[in-house]
Amino acid sequence: MEAGREATQEGDRPPAVESLMEAVAKGDKVAFERLYEVVAPRVFGLVLRVLRDRAQSEEVAQEVLVEVWRSAARYQPGKGSALAWVLTIAHRRAIDRVRSAQAGLDREERVARMEVHRPFDEVAESVEAQLERERLRRCLGGLTPLQRESVTIAYYGGYSYREVAELVKAPLGTVKTRMRDGLIRLRDCLGVDR
Image (cartoon, rainbow, N blue to C red):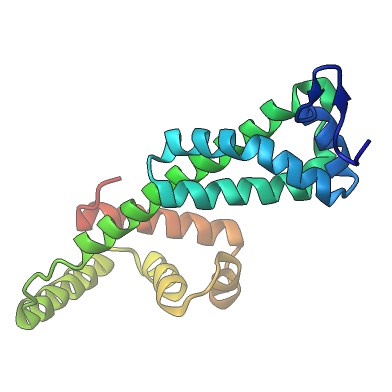
């Protein structure tokens, strides 16, 4: 009897996928060739039904069969047939390809929307930025001196609560309270939604 083939009473017929898978798991290349012949058409058919694109289906089917070769040792006969295991891999790969393609389309659409050129008015942008700065300055002026000092050191200086507390020589809890109250007042003054 040849490796990877089984004789039967009806004559030679392709061996069961399970026995081929067992041999493939042991690294038998001849058994993989036979397994490929038996399952490749089914894998391709399944992938084609999901992707509906012949070229992509051929590519995904090839990836599936390479994965079967590499991971045949992970197949567990007690959990289902070898063919079902292979077709599950094929289905998952096909779905992954659909999701990947959709994600790519979504990404391209977002980029296309971002690239819509809107006229840029440099003067208007500059005036708007100046008005925002003046508004912020006015709102900062509405804070108590201690709140203004804490908020200014933290946000313009880039210091943490603990560092601000050390700089103003005040307890950490006091600084946190000052900053919280100051930020609430700023939010209200600037009309920022919560």
